[in-house]
Image 1 (cartoon, rainbow, N blue to C red):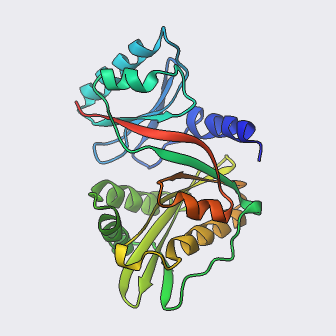
Image 2: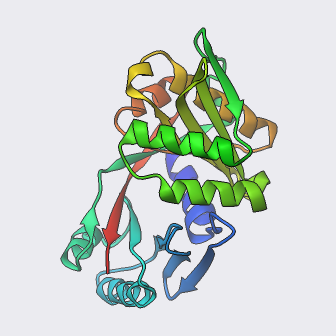
Length: 258
């Protein structure tokens, strides 16, 4: 994989040319910043910027004023190659709080290892309705220890209004939900994104996460997507590398609460 070329394509298609991630959201382009604006229950934040040392502080202040006027918490999604090089420090100085750093990993679908299957006793079901969404949200809370209100709302809205833009799956041990994940499909691009893959602690280390990645990758290939993208935590990066994903840069969410 030509890392520089694929990263430039990702920036162009998925960041500068971003599309809203839910029916309730919209993309706005203001100056050299691209942001998503949603409801208080959706994701609000900056997805791309083209700044330099002379323009960064004013652009940061403009976004703070805009989202504060809406009363929304928002995120500035900073990538390791974004400019200026001290943009993270400028965000911290402006009152943003950095979250744990992740690794942007991308795999070319035709080069990935896609034969991983769920371990014995684990069955995987598609999520298509409110009951399934509730189980996905419950697994998310158990796996990550975070509130799943936003996920619950967004996933149900997507499945209801735009079902072709998301694939969600649930893994069960008998009748017990133990892992869940989703894939975001962006029409008109070559990228599909893997999100929310989480397994309840007692069931980790059995290959369930790997199997759900492979399942979604096969689905992406069938739908004609060339690349899969993951914002990987340190726990999932080794699994993804074994499947054929490659690290391209880092990504750090910077949160601002009005």
